[in-house]
Length: 269
Length: 159
Image (tube, rainbow over all chains, first blue to last red; front, top):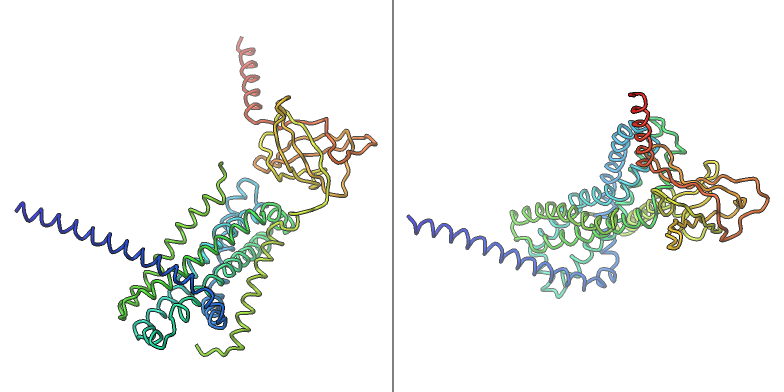
């Protein structure tokens, strides 16, 4: 009886230890992979058309979802913001509220989440399937480095697309807020744009927002290509890898956002 | 998957163009990139006993029009007064007897410096000092004063 309990405890410990070792090993592999992709950067720009193709697939094809979501997020922000602000007679600050929340947080974060689910998952599935159908091994056999030919262009396509998508998201959001705030609720357009312009600082708010979206782009693209490259070469493995990409990217975006915000926007010193 | 090279280049080019356009829109229309950098102007100094919640880049307004911004705030260690350097935009001139006061727009609004020009004929030069200032109204002090007055009058009527 006692020995059975001891065995059970030992089993749990063994499994925990094994899991921890596997996780640390995977982290090491991921780091090695990151360095390898970074070293293949020249390859991604030497054959520019490969990277352009990936910008098309992850950037251009994500446009619709980014633009429409941005518009709706901006319109909802305007409605909700107006509801609270007008209680304090500050409804003319609506532009400030919407612009700051979009440029600083919602633009990079929501665009990043959408990008992870729209483009990140596609990248993982594509690379995973290439691995499952042994296309990657075939390339290696033909002395073509799959890191240079497949992974690096996808990585850089994502990194370049992400800041542009985030900026478009914020712009559409501000436009949506303008539609609701000025056209629907009838806030004075001069106050809407004027207060916004006075309160949003280029260096402090906009550049920091762009830096955020750039960091998210790197994180999402790295996770996407790594999960694809590391996927088990089976149908189930590819599906697991795709799920992991979305989950890990979302968590990475939100956690990184907190860290970046602490450094960029702390109101205290 | 079957997008030919020219169409692809076109799409990516359009995407990058509108993306950069969006960043420009944010910078110019939403943010205040234009007001950053070297707007020509000159500096004046004003000394206050208390600046309340005045912050850097707070506007200086004359008759409600923004004519400059707070550029620097420091404490004069000799007099324990706050010395505020205001950069006035090129084209605006103020008389030497201008009164600077620290005001708040609305109850929760931003703190700004109000400039009321006087009747003097001489104008402030670059680096000129404003001698007439009015400090910020500290709400807590005001409430404290009000309570003391209230208590005093209540004691008086109770007798």
